[in-house]
Amino acid sequence: MTAKSAVAPLSRPFRVDRLPRDRAGIVIKATPEEEAALAADFRIPAVRDLVGQLQWSGTSAHLVITGTVSAVVTQVCTISLEPFEAEVSEPVEIVFSDREPEKEAGDEETDIPDPIVNGTIDLGQVTAEFLALGLDPYPRKPGIAFEPVAEERESPLAILKTLKQDDA
Image 1 (spheres, rainbow, N blue to C red):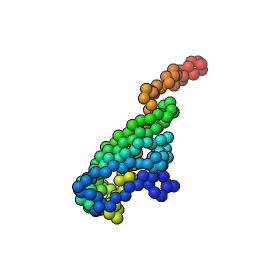
Image 2: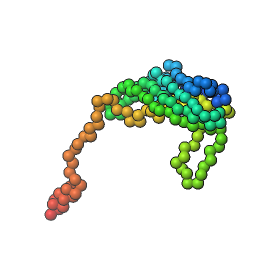
Image 3: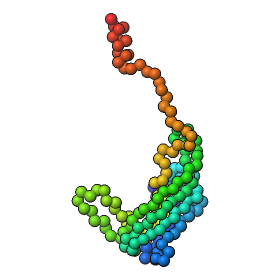
Image 4: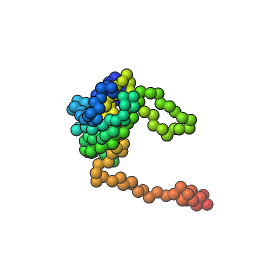
C-alpha cells in the first residue's frame, strides 16, 4: 500500500466470530480495478486472475489461515527490460491472535501473530500480501540469460611495472 492510499487496494474484512465453522474456507477474487490498483502499488505493469483460496482453523481468539494465492502478473525483465507474463502461486500460512504476543528472552526466531483488530481480519489484505511475497524481486524473462561483458584489462600491477620501466 502506498503512502498516498488510505485504504488497501484489496480489502475483504471478516468478523472472526462470524466466520462459518461448517464451511472453513473462502475464495477471494480481485476485481479488475483492484488488480490494477495492486499492480500500481507493486510497481509492475499488470496483475490479473488474482485468487486467494483460503481456509481457517482455530478459535475467534487464535485463528490460523492457510491456503494458496495465485495470479498471472506482468513484470519487466531486469536484463532485457522487456515485459513478460509469469504465474505466481504462493502458499499462505498466517496466524492471527487477539492477545498480545508473549516474548521470551532470547527468542528472536518466534513469529509474532498478526493482530485481530476489533474482532476483524482482512482476508483481501492477506491475499495481496502473499501475492507480493510471491513476486520475483529480480524477474527474468524465460530464455534470457545474464552474460557479463568480459573486458581484457591490464592489471594495476602491470600498469605500475610499465611506469617503472618508463622512468628507467
